[in-house]
Length: 246
Length: 391
Image 1: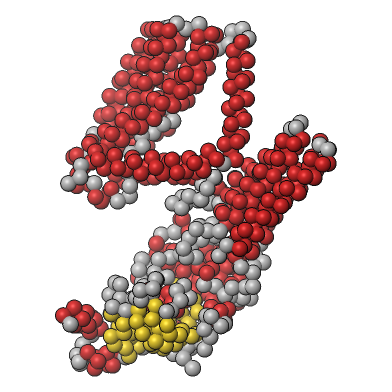
Image 2 (image 1 turned 120 degrees about the horizontal axis):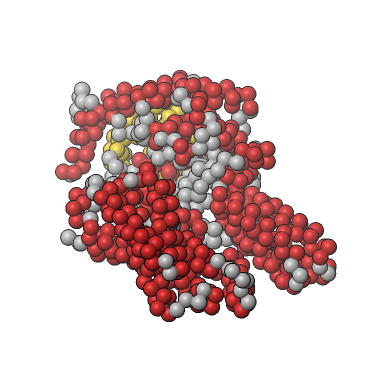
């Protein structure tokens, strides 16, 4: 059974569909990159997966659960890191992490263990009592990342994770992703940093105008676009040009 | 290209509509009822007091102090926006076309406020201070000139010497007091001396403002000014663009629950968001203090009105207006957020009512406080039921 499965999903913000007939899977231990131009439908796809939007048609399941039938089990199976940090103005960093522990029913000892490790990795030990208003954009993003990893779910959904992060934090994030993947977690990540996507993703999905243009490993994409030896940058540009002149 | 003067005009129009929109909530709010009583009582007491004023009352000292206090705290309403740093920067040399109407409007507002106070002071100045009409006309003229001077000087200092804002405040306060006081007591020499000093200070500050226009700082000041209004309006209704000020209040950590997801968020929001917390303190104190009034039916009525006000404002303040919050994605327990908010609203609405009832027990006949309490509970429960039915 796939960890995340999208089956012919069509949907959008209103009656007008933004994404059309999207199907793909994320398997345990797999990092999947969702790549596309601004407005290609990446964030819309993610919003459907996390349950903020309801598909017009098609089905989304995580670990075999759908949000309409087993909402709690569905939500427990993933965490989400949004592109723009969404924090509570009235909670300290420590309380954000406590809230995640409460929501995902993590026992106190385990929570402390995970918090200590994450704080050290993201160099945030001295900020525990701080409110978000005192954080920089990068620090806010680190809080989102730590909150997501704190829950240790089966699936991570990550939207543009590198924006605003310093090089050390990017390295820490990539280390975490690698470790989680080795432990069997699945990751769906959108990014415009194509070199990183090419290097770290096991599978790539090229989204254009709300449709999947090509999907699979780098080799699969090269074959699909008829560009042997091409980098992801080349494939990406070729895909957009091909669509423009089509 | 649209000129800068009309840009300010358009901004002023939308600013005015914004103010008007929120003033409707402020005027129809619970504070307005209290203010109405207070102003009425103060007006009546003032007119009674004027009939037999105490011997040797320092009328000019009081009048000069009041006028100074009305004029000095005002700052220019520049209506600058964040993006101006980028879009208006290339037009810096023509910025005067934008700033002129901005300063003109700011002066007008101060003049209106100061003249209202002057009119209120007129009976005091004529009956107790025995001022003649010519002097009153002169005072009116000086109030207008002082308002102009105050706004422009403050603007110069904001522009050129932001590090000296406190000193500038005291200098302006002192000079304004001197101008009003020496005019009223008829000491023309010291009055002219104060005018001379004010003129010199005006020119000195104008020289400070010869540097390039500090967009960042001015935009910051303007946002602080607007935030103050929005935060005030937020006491009466939900203001979307207000960022509620958060205070740690570590002393309350002991009562911040970690029982469940919603209670965790609700208790912290309530205790730490200044608007919400102070609103509750203010209304709860009123509910508790009212039973000390002697009219039983008024006490019963106010008990209902203010308990209901606590319920409405707490409910609105706790149901965040954000489109997306992370807790929307968390595995939800059986209790929904609105259920948790309703439970909390009952706690914060009924606890001051209970104390109020204890006080009322010793002060009023049981029929009044019994009916008052019953009506208060029914009104709160009706409101919560209505909210529950809403999608």
